Image (cartoon, rainbow over all chains, first blue to last red; front, side, top):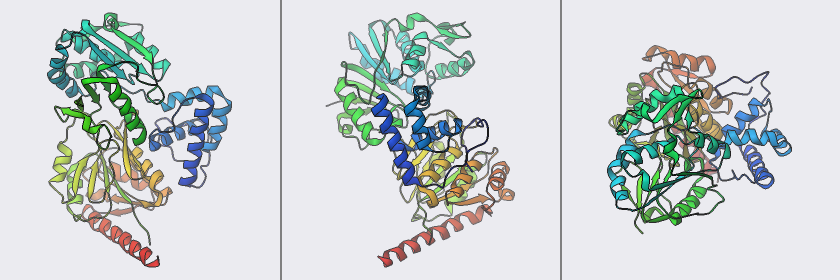
Length: 292
Length: 200
């Protein structure tokens, strides 16, 4: 009997899942990801395995299929199925001022460094639907740094970038975001930054005046500039250790000396080749400064 | 002889005091890595691991992405992340909450079952919702073992009752019997290991 660990029950009868053979499952998954890479060019081969496996099975169950191989046939022959799977495989869960303590620490320890620069280049890698880009833009504006900053906000996924550009977020989350904003050291009334419009909260368009949204693939694309700050929170957690290490190489090459790298609060540089090139500013926040 | 690679524990309401007693009953050299998902507020800090540390000789740590699972350690899920077990290490994700929970016990249990098969001991303790029941069923479906706190000894019985309904073969034990039972099962492992070595 197939056991579903998903929120919504699937339509129709659940197909019988075959006897569990973990090694065979791994072969099937590796073949599927290899096929997707060679046919479509999307490279999920070095993503964290347990999470990929869970999301593949969610799609399999929603389609009423019974194996990874059955999904492979559909994905390779039907571009529409690839579209669906692409959305399944890219996690786009985020929030404005997620982890408010991080923003407090950023104001206290990074903003003073940034004040010493005439011009500030920031790369927001894996920006998803943009909630954290707008958060950073608000923070920089309140600190009087926005006008000399340029934020490059990138993501692998063109669809989420379009949403980020639009700057319309769900109204029902504004209470949560307001709480986060206050705890993040916000200096104004949060509601000054948006108006209720188009069935959502439309954010002040001047916040994206100095933001460039652009597609970039951390797995396959190269460095495209030199930055003073790189923000990449809760993105690398979806990669395996080897790919994490490779992306850290990319970040290192893209950071100016004494530039700042920001990771998610439960990520670390431990066991990464570049660990010794950074100093952690104000632990426990995962804010690192490139020192060599 | 059966061998175990991971003890996966899930709990919510009343979990702190139950886990304190369970962990307090395990020796410092308990040979199987332990992973705990306790529902907690998304803003909670590292108080939970600190409180647990006070109760046990094992080393308690809050999980960071790609931490290696080690014997002698108790790996505690951080607030607002799902925990997924891979062979030998842990990944964090911020995928959508599952049945309103992040971390979700079901997600952690299912990943344990899929990665470790029959090597998993799943343990469900006190709690006020039904998270964990589906994941525990998956653990058993994959050949693992299920232990459930006797609902009569639970601060809130909803979670263990749901687990018992979902898993007919679950061993139901009073809170104070869980640690001794885990030790017995871990000795089975050691014995099995020794026998396998002899065979080689």
